Image 1: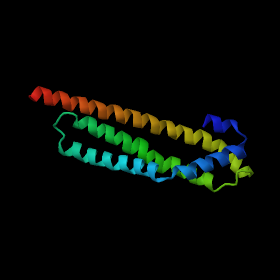
Image 2: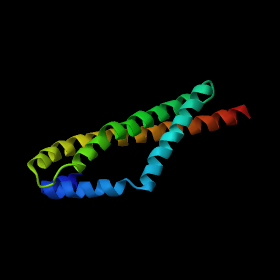
Image 3: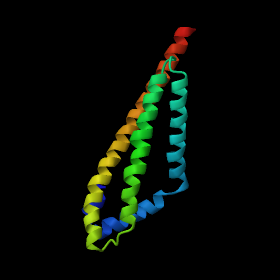
Image 4: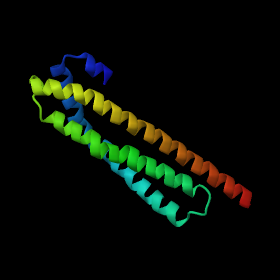
Length: 138
């Protein structure tokens, strides 16, 4: 985004519009919705088997991903992308939106990234907890 911000607004807008069109492709959509489905299943599993080791961490990781990554994408980044798709890159309205887009989209993207990293850490800790529980039970 910093590189796009360095371009004149019409070029930055046109580049981001192109990126957004090509991003909505089967590999990204499969990853986004597949990860979301897995996290939903893990959240349900963690609630059913709560007393077992790692279940709380599974729930935390799932919620971090579902709220911080998926919902952030759906509620903030996608609407921003859709608004940008509707503007003429050479218009004054486009230039105004671009300034807001750069700041807002980047902020929400940081939320998504941090949430995904923290979710991954929680899942890793859940796996370690499960291995330790299994070894101690043996």
